[in-house]
Amino acid sequence: MKRQLILLGACLISNLVIKAQQIFLDKVSVDYAKTVAVWPLIKELDPQWFEDGKDHMPKETVSYFNFTSDGSRSIFKRTKEAEIPKNMWFQPFADNNVVYNDYTSGTSISQKPIYEETFLVKDSLLKIKWKITADTRVIAGFECRKAIGILYDTVAIFAFYTDEIAISGGPEGINGLPGMILGAGIPRLHTTWFATKVSMADNISPKTLAPATKGKNVTRKSMLESLDRIMKAWEEWGRKMVLAFFV
Image 1: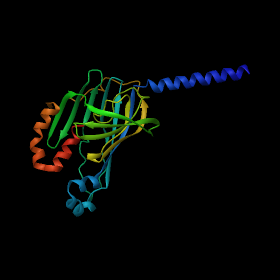
Image 2: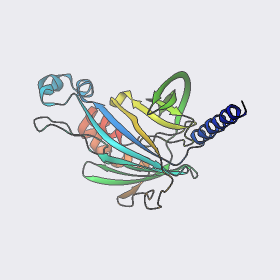
Image 3: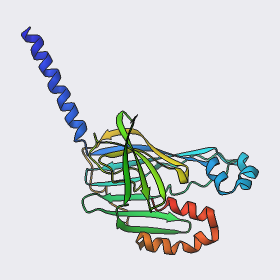
């Protein structure tokens, strides 16, 4: 009987330790798959163009990214580009972004190659108005709660976050929830990001979390002004694609 009580106590302590590790986990490496639903995106932009060229467009593209954080800072960048069949046409957008966030100072440094120019955007963290819902789903082994957000007053975002990882970050510049965002989507861009793997990352070197340094120094506002001529030239396509670089 005494031996059984000891074993039971050991199991309870082990479970408490595991639970504590989950709740206070903040040094992580998260792999994401970014999926763009190409056919709905093109059809929405130009129905006739879509009908004429859909046989030469992939139905969707999937590219892969990594988010690494020490709890106070993070870096998000691509690890594997989308594979486009040789007989298909589509240029993935915003796949070369490198996003550095500092959650302590509330600042962000993002390298964003856009068309023929590379911008280094230094600004505050994105401000998203969130509403947390009761819906949940499991992503990469973590139970996540759903939240609905509004960015720039008009852009809808949905996200799934877990409070078992104490980082208020996520893919690209999406942030501001009480835990790590493991799934997100922007319907206007027909784009989603979902975590495929979460790992502990205890030994993170300063170099790993260093922000990008090359590019034209801008704020989000001044970058928008620089891109105004592109948006006018490309009309609806340009406006939608440029939005991808402001996330």
